[in-house]
Image 1 (cartoon, helix red, strand yellow):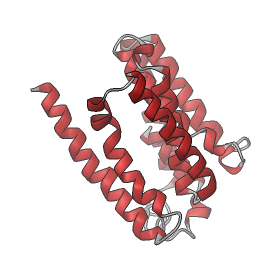
Image 2 (tube, rainbow, N blue to C red):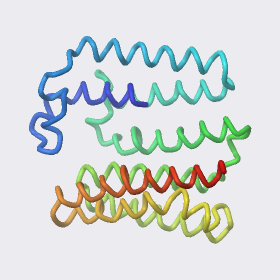
Image 3 (cartoon, rainbow, N blue to C red):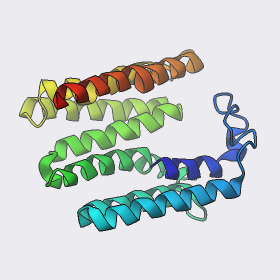
Image 4 (cartoon, one colour):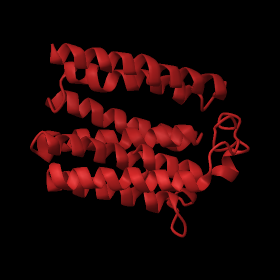
Length: 214
């Protein structure tokens, strides 16, 4: 996914030059050669598919192909869905489901994860995208739908409280300032959400992994 997101950033150079939060990126400041980036994407993608196709289940490789196709049609012209009204339905939303499915496949059964959880992750990914794009009304609607599905998964037992606390709660806490950014102090709320998710949540996830292992 890192290679694909790198490709996405490369296709957004002209737009990102006017984004205060992205102006310091190496791409924007022309510190990285574009040809090198494309070579990096090609090499990493090739290695990933080589390892996957030779050592992992076929279903996992198929999901990787779906991730690649999803990112390409979202990012690369002439389709470039990110510039169409269909953008929220792809990228983050679809990749959230595909990542979850890839983990389930490695554990032996794609339906190890209940359908309601897949739906919740799809809506959560879509909501995150809409919040980053400052589409307050759409983000609120998707947030209500996602919360309803989450309550359903907890009520039916598709997800228990411990699973919620480990897998969902840290991201949910980070989503609060992200949602507030739609209405006040956008840059400050973005910065707080970034800290909560990429630092606090990652430390929490790491501790959970250690507890599970030991």
